[in-house]
Length: 269
Image (tube, rainbow, N blue to C red; front, side, top):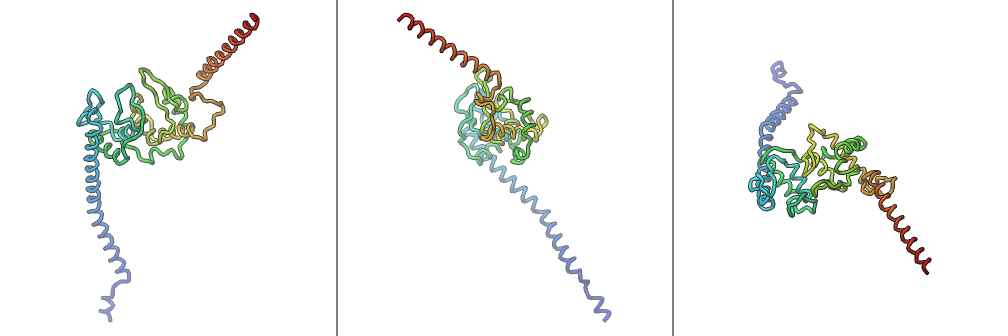
């Protein structure tokens, strides 16, 4: 009886064995799965770069050079990063229709998958700003009032107070921000396209960018109130006063001339 009781297993022995088996399985997974996942990600990235290079050779190389080094018709793309590609191609500015003082926004000719492939290839040429995630540019919960302060300090000089856009020098202009997606607004601040300065996170943190996006969306939404009536592009009281002065006074002068002319005809008759 003593021998049988000595051989009897503890009730928790089976549980311990099961836990050890699970731990061993987890250890094997931890040892092999990450390497396999990393290899799969690396393969997918390589394929994206390869496909992006093909797209680049057809649509971009004639201006930017076969290796993105730039030519007399287009700047170097080495180090511009994937965010710049996503913005320029996603808004239809690239490929450009023709050279000029500024490349305008137009209908996009690439799918998002193709844009991602182009961005992967350009990113492989040199490190640069990375395409933001939705969490980075989503303005939900952002402070639109704070964004208004930041916008008036950093952006209104060119885009005016409500983002309606405005003229610059030598045929250049600041485009309207109405209808621009939060993602492209964020990328524009990241990369500084064309005449715009860049605002990296070291200069303007992510939260401030989100606040600005919230402000731009608020003032350009259909629900935005405009108690002043006709906004005249939102350029402010100077432009509105000038409009009233030029057209209002001009109309009064025209009426006075008309009245005087008809009074003179009446007297002659």
